[in-house]
Image (cartoon, rainbow, N blue to C red; front, top):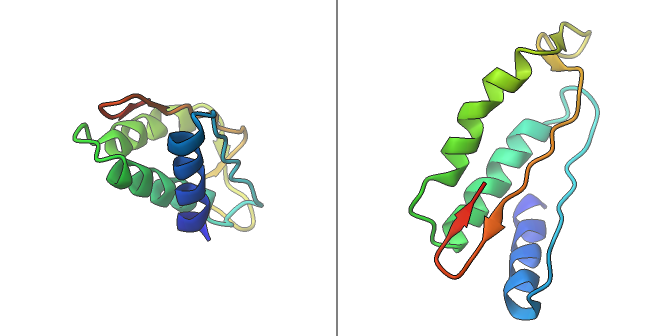
Length: 96
């Protein structure tokens, strides 16, 4: 489950000071964007971020998608590329 994966990654980051990665993959229309939104929202919440990091990242998404989307059988607006996202945490909060 997305919350379990995000929670484990965050807890390991905090307790072991080790960088963490979460890979969200799947076929067109599988819910990758929604899963990413949920993970970011959860991480921002447990990290007690006041900077609305999830919203800032999602605001950039339409610009990225304008450069390569196409209609497919499963999705009217399917990306033709992968997305790479880095979120950095420090003692105060997280940032993208």
